[in-house]
Length: 153
Image 1 (tube, rainbow, N blue to C red):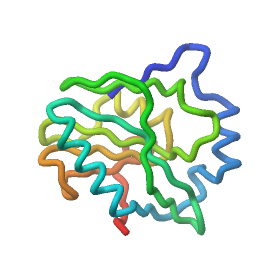
Image 2 (image 1 turned 90 degrees about the vertical axis):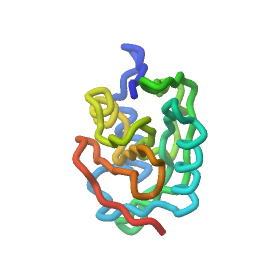
Image 3 (image 1 turned 45 degrees about the horizontal axis):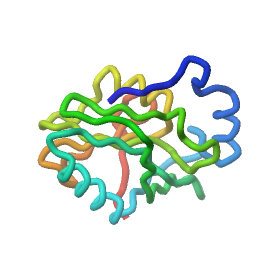
Image 4 (image 1 turned 135 degrees about the vertical axis):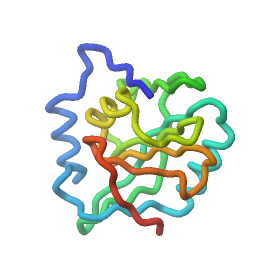
């Protein structure tokens, strides 16, 4: 997965301030909960997109120290069996996006160097789903690319 950010539109202080005002900063949650219907949707989209990757932003919010993720946001971009590009500069200024999800054709759900760069610039929590595209082939990562835990509710 890659990220197209024009040089003048890189995330900056304004993005961080808006994230803080919306309660979406790293210090505000201790647990991540993913909606079960969202997991089903991610699995279905990954299967339908195969052999191409798909990419979307995760939507949610922090409440009572729990990051609850319950939606997807799709932005214009391009996909292939080699990767997916999302035009994040087209994201509306005020959204509830908290991270990303994308698929990997094949059985490896580890982040690539491009994924790690994207994670560091775009949210708090990220998912990669690999074949066979089921609940057990989803891996979660934090902003730094470290594996993260979550619950399905």
